[in-house]
Length: 187
Image: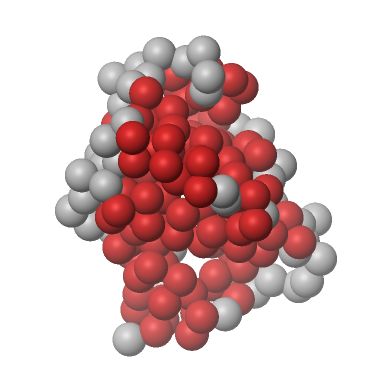
């Protein structure tokens, strides 16, 4: 049960919270679109995987489930790979560069101060570009904030896998601002 009275109680997870403050939702969803959907040397699935891992580490069931579903739909290993990464990415079948970037994301989820030169240098040594390092840190920081928003206000987290399947289908066909249902409210 959410800790505040939401106007639209039918929207699960962050969607209900964003609908409550559409003037804030627009910029947040635009940032999400840039971070996870714009052109990048990291695939959309890899960036969604970063979100799933960060959300797992932060204990945010909603974001872990929905972005894990988004990642699974865009990665060859599907849901099994996402689960393996979230449990133990050191032993998951992923490229070493991605493993190093996930370690960086994990450090950010813990604290900005947990990001050390060694963590960054390891990613760089394995071929990560400054842009990839920047974007992984920003994705991890942004979604740590979103995780705290969702868990802090106790947003609804459905158990029905169909909810996540339907939202994943919609995301693959549209953008985050449209998916959030707030574009019309903020324009």
